[in-house]
View (cartoon, rainbow, N blue to C red):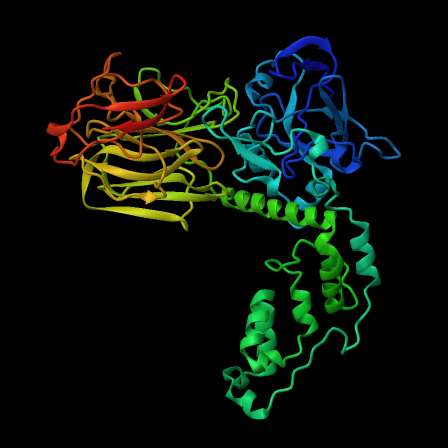
Length: 580
């Protein structure tokens, strides 16, 4: 299974040299580079062969080794094996990780198999899978949906707990490492978050404390206690309340309530501090190997663990793992609905009808062959076709919550016969409806287009009026995807978790600056005249919006007094101000 072809480290283009496939140096959960520490060199990969994207596997534990200008890694294909097993690693596989042009690896089907995918530090994978085994296909698709940045640094919409930063060298935001020089990486990020000998030793050696150690006893008069409303509750109920509250809330209620202040916190309370949602939930091994005293262990952690680099890194990785699990959980039981069209990712679907003209709204979308350092990349295409022009009674918009914000997950259109037409991913419990007073034809939609996908939608009615927004349109460029009120088909493109492009059937003659352009902060009103030297058609694609600046009021009351417009620029094309 070992692929002996090599790839140029900059462009991932096959070369004629013999060797193994290059792999990325950045891992998906930590956001940290491969360094000299042993744990940072050990990795697992989720990978596929060539275009077999529905057959995702996880490797065993491999170890990186760097060459002259590339990083080379080999891992056992058996997930139960390690590179350093006494009996040997068995069959191994070489994997190209985090390619920003994955189609490179799906083209050469007549040659040796290309293995490609995404990598995790072995320690981070152990944390990530401690109590929940991910769906590998969904995890792979989620990784495929994220821009790689300039350093093969996946942009999940967060900063990797301080390891990443957002840059804008190419106008569209790009997520890259905060530490391009490995020598500047802080000790916290270099410390093994899973194998922590001090933690294991503390769990084993924790002894039960005497009742008076670290315990402040407060005695209240009987009259004071009886005036406290909590005095009416049984002690067992009071103890249950303490388990449900956070530690900061316990501090507050003990200051406010004499009954709680005099309550001796039970071992059940101290054990609850290590359960999900509490401050030490990132120490799951304590559940498997409970200490002799939960209270003593909790107090000891507050003495030594808060400044321990491995514990700090454990807390960081645990939080990032929970975020990734939360994302994957929203993908469960949500297949991409609609009639599939062929894409590089779904090759068995029917090809798109080239005779159909699609009027498309998109922002910062990358083609499969393009370099995916920022923006979005769709790899699932779906259509809805109607036997007659669509007459809408209600539209439901399904949403997904991502670290970067709320995005459109899918759409459901209910026609005048109450027939349901769904496209994309649908969560019944996370939908917002737009109800029309009466069923009517629609011109299309107005979309709030973020560089990562669609954040909000509004209907454009038959008469050109617009519905209220659903989603989060604030601060996002707009696209008015509207035409004649004779809508016969819809096409939408998705990545693994959100809508990134929306199209409606139309004609080339319908396209103009109003309905085929990305605008900010809003689409100009109807009736404006667009006088351009290069013709009256907008560009074919957009990464940045056209920004509108208006002088005067809507009734044009100040136009007669306008004598000049001064535009201040920096360099050649950067506008710094406009003076009327």
